[in-house]
Length: 115
Length: 111
Figure 1 (cartoon, helix red, strand yellow):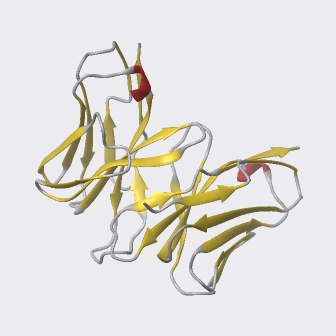
Figure 2: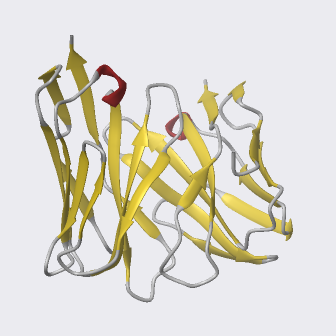
């Protein structure tokens, strides 16, 4: 267990409402990631963070924002949820201090349904 | 941007048969990783390959990294029901901190 918890694990919301997913880690890792998983697309990177207040976009960042005000928490926000954002969201942390190395450890996932 | 393609998308095999999934990157990679995701679960790291032409084994699983560091394969010998799941490759390009995942190969076993 890499000490990652995601909350909420399940959420149903309506189009146009804001949603925030939380990823919490207990091991002080620098790198944290948010992925979404959809059938036929595998895992696609939304945003990632390489330190407190240091974040960057992934390949599917439109409609999402993130914040990392402290090492242990990485928040993913949908400002105005749309049905296309119905998905399973995974948070991950990366072990290893050296760039270009280190495996990812994933949280249990958050299943979001936007009606 | 970097793309990682994986084939096949689905594979159904009889228990005891072998299974192979292939991964191809549009760019040269610094390393490639493999993950397994059981139905309803989250991806779990299996292995990382770094060197050109590298081959690593984990019991019945054999992982290869191509000479050009643009492709990789995972081969499972004599599949068992515990091998059921989706296998993902994930590539890391040089100078890039973003791991790009393939679309995955979903393996089902026919008992």
